Structure formats: structure tokens, C-alpha cells
Length: 226
Picture (cartoon, rainbow, N blue to C red):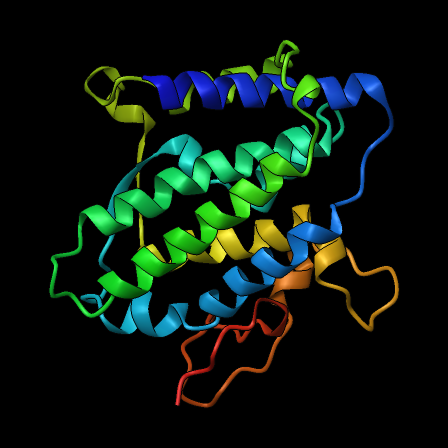
């Protein structure tokens, strides 16, 4: 309960940054932990696809299927810092749910646990990168609604709000949205690159033995099948 209250308090405070000034750039201190996460995500095909049964899915809340389209929909009305904080909250829950379905001896468990630890480290740097006084403002409606759904008692969530997604797809979304929301940490040689554009993530080299739709995403560092 204390952790929940603290998270809501921190989320609310980030709205204060929107009131205090224009859209802020990602602090440089964030780039090292985020790039560490990106390095881990480069192995997600092996640990989240090859080590799971074909078509394996886990049950997550509809709001945990957090895609580029979610960001595009909220970005015109919501300060990017709030979207970054929401991103941490969403994927903290997603990683916990993936770990929950893995047995102690599953080959993907240690990988996912390490990814979660790196994720928590990055969140800690994120919180420390902003002054305490900004964590005091009311949330905008779009963020509050999402947060309310994410913190619902699972026993009271209607069946229509549950979704089934593969662990690989969930980590794909984590990577794409990370590059979108923290784009300053992932510079590109391409001019005017928009990491928030879906078309950006259709780029890549497809191997002869890959199925249709399986694209090697160089920006996310995903390893190709061999």
C-alpha cells in the first residue's frame, strides 16, 4: 500500500513539471541505465520466444498492452514526463507478470529477473533526476484514468479488460516505446528520425527463414534468428 501511494504521489508530481515549464529533454543521467535495458532487450527473441511454447500468451490488463499508438493518442495533451513515468509503471507490472509464470528452473527466469532489476535501477535514476517539489500536482485526466485502471483490484476487473499477449510482443512494445519516449538516449544517423512513428519499426533485414512479419529491428538491438 505504501508503494502504491508513493507511486501515485510521484506520478502526480510530474504534472508539476508541465506547469513549471516547456517539454523537458531526457536527463543525460538516464541514458546509461536505458541503454543497459536496451542491451538486455537485444536477447528477447531467444528468451521470450524460443524458450516458450509456440503461440504462448499470458493474461495482462488491456492498459498494459502499451504501444506507440497509446503514446500518439495522449502526447498532444500530456507532458512527456508524465508519459515516461507511466511507462515505468506499466512495464514494471508487465515484467512482474512474466516472471510470475516462469518456474524457478525456466531458462528465461534469470534473464527476466535481471531485466526487471535493470528496469528498477533506471526508474530510480529517473525519479532522482527531478526535484522533489515537482511531485505534488494533480494528474491530468488521461493519465489518471489509465492509472486507475492499472491499479484496479484484479478480482474486480471485467473480463473484457483482460488481454492475452505473448511475452515477446510485450517486450517488443517495451522497447519501441522506450525509444520513442527517451529518444535523446538513442541517437540515429538518420535526420529527423521519429522513433514514435510505427513505420520506423517496420524497417530491418528479414532473413530467409523468418516468417512474414518477423523483422529484425536494429534500433532496438534485437538479435536475428540464426
